[in-house]
Image (cartoon, rainbow, N blue to C red; front, side):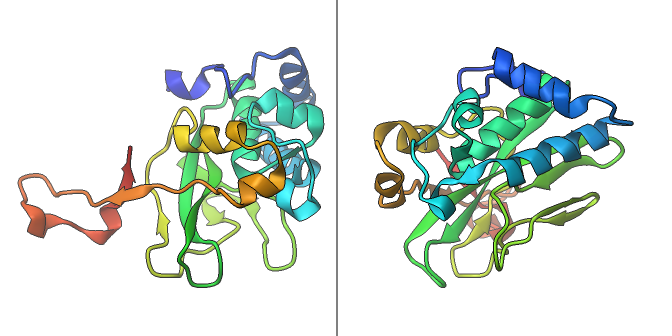
Amino acid sequence: MTPYLAHTRWIDGDHPDVAAKAAALAQGAASLEQVAQRCFEFVRDGIRHSVDYHSNPVTCRASDVLKHGTGYCYAKSHLLAALLRANGIPAGLCYQRLAVGTEGPPYCLHGLNAVWLEPYGWYRIDARGNKPGVDARFTPPREQLAFPVLAPDERDLPEIWAEPLQVVVDALTRYPTVQAVLENLPDVNLMPSIKPGAGRAGWIDAGYHVAE
């Protein structure tokens, strides 16, 4: 679990402001699960989604997301991971590949989190921010994410990353405005997994994952 508790450049749970917010959210909580729920609901409801609110600046580092109160889904997931880790709760980053429109293409990544909860194990949560048609909640062990995977070539990517994908960091640090990021949303190539001992015929759709 060490990588999922680490304070890093983008998930800087050791930043004084992030650490203070994490402590405030944990105060009086009866369990780590309750702390996790409080952190989730704070990021979901208290941090504005960049596109929903047309809110600049573009943020990436967790402490900047907290400072400015705004971020894309990816940036919000960085802050949530930082708050959870600051409270000693293992947290990672997950991604979905979703159609930008109703059916796609084009496609883009959507960022969310996985948190380690006893007795459930890894549990995915999506702090993107609710709006009409989006109702993500903290309801372990049942997942209630922001978006279903429906269109062709949409995927729930199975990896749990300790650090953001570089393509996500590049998008959030290269483009100066929310609109510019919106016009250059990150995406990945998908590589099918191979069953142990199998050849190409062993590829299974459920095994699709990120090809870095």
